Amino acid sequence: MTDSSAYTPPAIWTWNTANGGRFANINRPIAGPTHEKALPVGRHPLQLYSQGTPNGQKVTVLLEELLALGHAGAEYDAWLIPIQEGAQFGSGFVEVNPNSKIPALMDHSGPEPIRVFESGAILMHLAEKFGAFLPPVSEPARRAECLSWLFWQMGSAPFLGGGFGHFYAYAPIKIEYAIDRYAMEVKRQLDVLNRHLATHTYLIGDDYTIADMAIWPWYGALVKGQTYGAGEFLQVHEYTHVVRWADLIAQRPAVKRGRIVNRTVGQPEAQLRERHDASDFDTRTEDKLNPPT
Image (cartoon, rainbow, N blue to C red; front, top):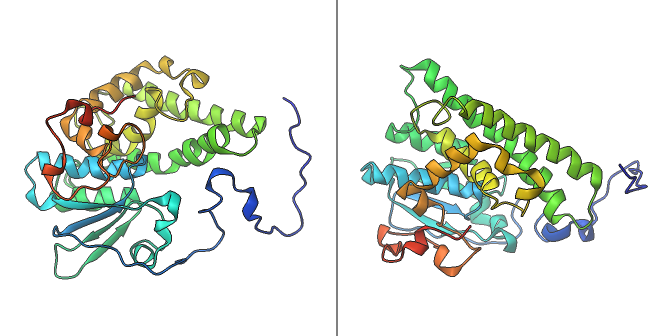
């Protein structure tokens, strides 16, 4: 390994706004709003403020799955929050999520509005609200297994996205140590999933749950070569059980719908920038529900 930097940390860190690479305009060391902007509110009880990143896809996939099961109360408005433009720092969004990250949800179905932020919390809130895709408390072992994999994703994905993805694809300079360190960890995570899925159809067995919905947008896309252009670098085809699982989930009609909501990249026919009614999906064109890989 070569020494790519002679950097020595100073005694006191200072914020250099010019040293943030692709995300320099939105990353900052302070919280709170940067501008006044109220959030729009549609006609449905569930108001989602998001973008079609892996974290955003988790929630739209679950909502579409709930609607497919016949839960009419899961109808929702999905408003686009373009994070590259700093929309997550608007005053209205910060009121819903003080952490200024998508997705964020306002649930107006009860007597008092409920705000829910962090994708895992939103998945749990909706699964418990509708009694679907999460084993009940009367099945403690299966519930614990589901929640364990759900929180595995919450703890693991930052190494994939903010770690490997940042240094491999977005950092203004390539640092061999950083890329090597995070590539090793991502491959370890894939091996964890691959060994488990060798004997399980889905994460907790034969039942498809919010654990699968949380993990699939990150690791399913990765093994299908859709993430950071790193498929060959990481040799993702070797994780055959993860690939099988990823393909199985990708064929679900609700997943095909949910994965394109608030999507702003790829072919135009593979994007549904906002969703306010089921009719917003153009079911006449199969390409729209099967984004190019």
